[in-house]
Amino acid sequence: MAMMQEFKEFAMKGNVVDLAVGVIIGGAFGKIVDSLVTDIIMPPIGKLFGGLDFANYYIPLNGQAANLSLVEAKKLGAVFAYGNFFTILLNFIILAFVIFQMVRLMNKARNLHEHPVVTPPAPPAEDIVLLREIRDALKK
Image (cartoon, rainbow, N blue to C red; front, side):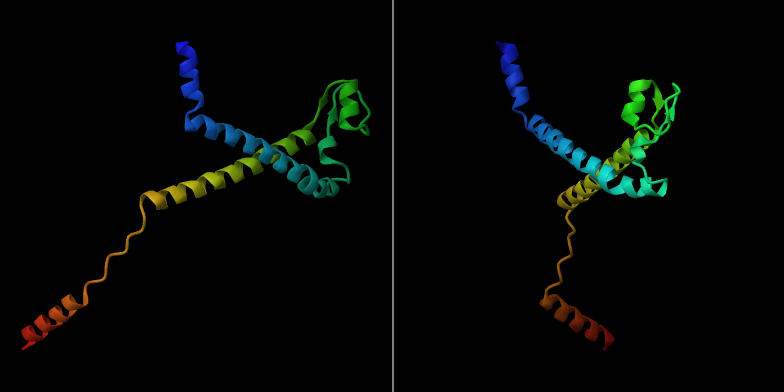
């Protein structure tokens, strides 16, 4: 029974809930980045390299015909799928950059919250008048 109580305390901590929310949002964001790379970024790059889907670029290692799609070529044997690797690598770079920017903004917000910019208070008007009177008296 003590282990169940311990597990309940662990599961109800704020960090675990925050982590779960982060994983869910991260999974959804990963799909958005995957779509961005696959559907928006890679087609122009593929067009630049011959008009094919860049993810289908590969080097056949089992004597497959080079004009097959990647899926068909993999069914016939091993392939060196450099186009698919490049697409996944681009996904990772974009996702890592966006997460880096989010963490950077969160750190800036945290620093502003922890160390707010404090402007020194303006001296009261009475002090200024008194200092001017002292200055004028010293000049005489």
